[in-house]
Figure 1 (cartoon, helix red, strand yellow):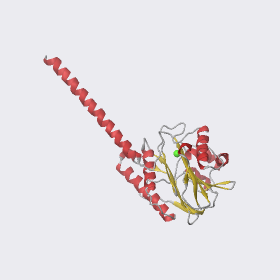
Figure 2 (cartoon, helix red, strand yellow):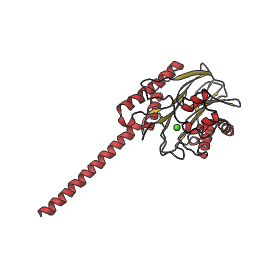
Figure 3 (cartoon, rainbow, N blue to C red):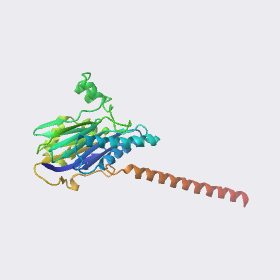
Figure 4 (cartoon, rainbow, N blue to C red):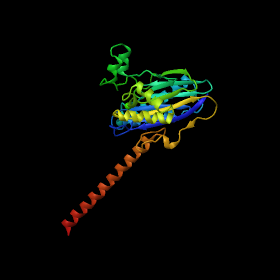
Length: 300
Ligand code: CA
């Protein structure tokens, strides 16, 4: 057994100005982080988490390793939130999938309301349970799934990475079968389209990861694109060897996407500070020039 084709698509959506989703697509490791917080803090949180996960050693396996990875992401986001007043209180969801070809298994680690799904045969199964207010209310019978689907507080999550010194991570391991298609996605997908449509789009895309990921993002945008949308799709197939990446041109990424296993916030913040310093210098020069003109007009 091995990982077959893999694909990832992220999109800002139709209503948000920034993309606060980040992801890692580094077979056998996959992850999605959906940030939350004021100003740019959500973006910083998700990218810090993704960069921490992206630095994982190759060859890690098992639930403890996945939980440790999410804890490392938690520590990184939390430290920044404590040190940087602009980022105080920020957090992010994290959903990780780690494929173990030798064990023929997929280990999932999960915090928040991003989701992992599996399509096996003709059936779509949600693998993760959302850590969200409405999901808790549905689980305790106080809301129906229909009421939850358009509840005004459906984006409130009850567990996040980076808001506390440590985090409670759900982990579990599933047997993988050749032919399985796995999806990781942010709530910008699942708030816009339901499970039936996810399955429909997967079939319409002939279960090709690149086609399915793009179709799902397009469908969420057609349904309103109220939030950032990120989808990772990968298949498990018979045989040995390296996974096949989808051709670059078939997994287009928007130019402004906050995508990365690389921590962009650092350079972005640097550029911001540099820009401000330059503006300040310009102001000083203008003030000195104005002062000289006044002095000259008085003393000539
Ligand atoms: Ca979101």
